[in-house]
Length: 139
Image (cartoon, rainbow, N blue to C red; front, top):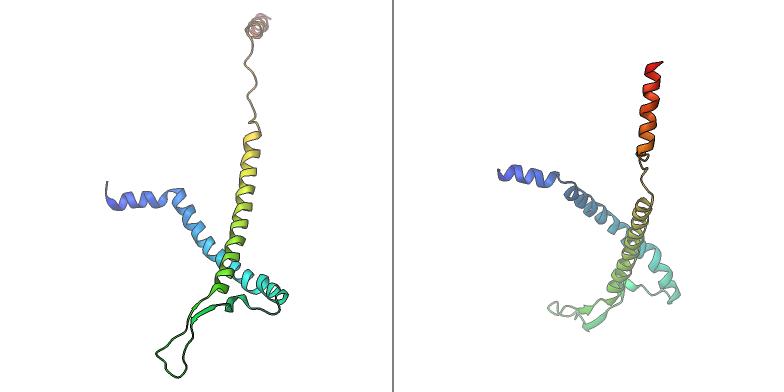
């Protein structure tokens, strides 16, 4: 079997395509969550904390020296980290709710009994059916 044929079969599998779609949707969802955190969640939190912009919070380890361009500012930007943690929590909550929803649907499908075939006739019913058929032929 050629490598190209094997690769084509690999790509044609449903789970690979599903995974690709999931990654693409996930990337788009990341932009939505980032916008939600930066533009919807954090402004009210900043307002409650006295106009504090979390994205600009940082611990300066070494201040920049404007007189000499050789010394650059070194800082730990913990505000951006706080925003990222909030984004993660939102994504985790949404994924949790989606998994919970899918599991609930799967449970409902598993609990719903499939329509069963009518039971097979008993030996007495078979015998009565044969007798009926013989009587119908004789008349």
